Length: 138
Length: 138
Picture 1 (tube, rainbow over the protein chains, first blue to last red):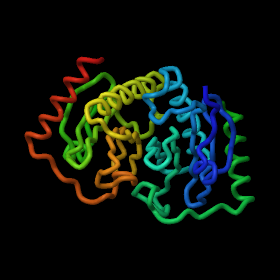
Picture 2 (cartoon, one colour; picture 1 turned 45 degrees about the horizontal axis):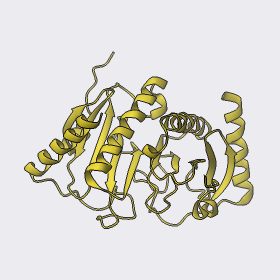
Picture 3 (cartoon, chains in turn orange, blue; picture 1 turned 90 degrees about the vertical axis):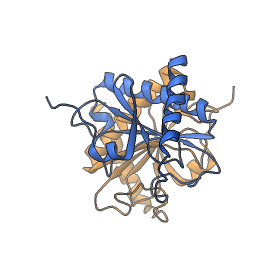
Picture 4 (cartoon, rainbow over the protein chains, first blue to last red; picture 1 turned 135 degrees about the vertical axis):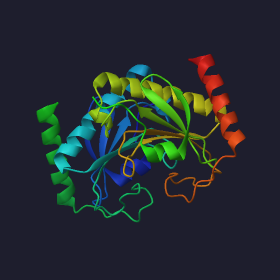
């Protein structure tokens, strides 16, 4: 069995947040959008339907839990949830807080121009706030 | 309790395929991409996390079943799965068959130019083939 590793592009584009069960949770390094990514810790899986039924259910549960916490933390208008994988094959689930005044609204965030990297302290603060809410509620 | 109705924009952009359990299944009228949409038949729900846990699991099961069948039917390179809802609030899950030579690859399909409506027979044929595979396997 292969050892699970995060895809190098995902790794370089994100900050690690936590291991939350099935998934490694990452924060996209783009301060324009509060944007988390769940990566199921399974090797060689590209599609949700390639996961076992139990893992599918776990991924759904973890995606929903992250979504609720992100909505509570940010007060966003909409959550966008997506598993695309056209550029990075490793299965990963985007959970993005969207605001009607954000840089891409009402379009999807992908292809909406270059990322605006976080100031280092800002990412750490976001992650700390996210984890505080996550632990308290779940 | 409100009566469930498909959002008027979703309705005008799609062909009905089937009721598959929790969800109404629709075919997007854009022949550039084999593109199905699942709409949970629940009123007033905009986010996956607003569904009950049982409905979340049903939505996952139905999304995965539709994804597998669409991949088998089309031989696509990747399935894209997404619940965005920035333009149509009613919760709906996109399941899109992507090819490395399609009109938007490797970008998402949204915002990739105007839809190319199906010739009527082509949509009916696609739906018939999809349903045949769906019934046989599930």
